[in-house]
Amino acid sequence: MNSCDKVQESLAWGRSIVVSEKEHILNCSKCSEVAFQMEQLDSMIKDEAIDLPLNFADNVMKKIIADERAWDTVTFQDFFAELFNHSLFRWGIGGVGFLIAFSAH
Ligand SMILES: [Zn+2]
Image 1 (cartoon, rainbow, N blue to C red):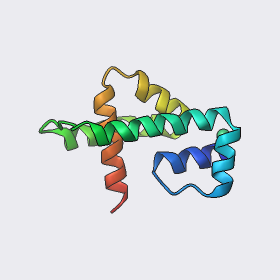
Image 2 (cartoon, rainbow, N blue to C red):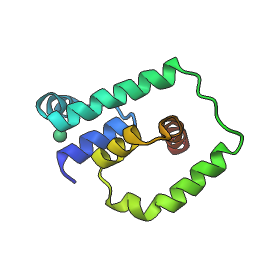
Image 3 (cartoon, rainbow, N blue to C red):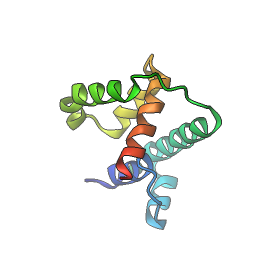
Image 4 (cartoon, rainbow, N blue to C red):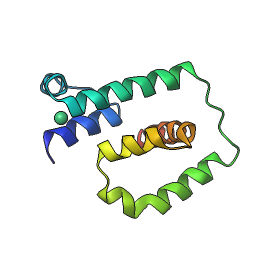
């Protein structure tokens, strides 16, 4: 795993960023873009009450299962590009929130 992947994974999962990663973000246009997007995503989650549909969890699981193969080959950059371009953008935010909550258990 190269340092871009490591840094972007830390950002995506909300892990604490160590000094070397911080320095990498400052010197890497790709990672600084991801950091910026994560920051925006974070403030959107905090600022907006996200209305979850009743069958939200079921849909997330279906989506995860359907995407499982594709997920092996997508990079974090692709993932965020997809997330930000997706017509179901709000659903994506909920999905990320769900994954973060899920991974904390
Ligand atoms: Zn980088």
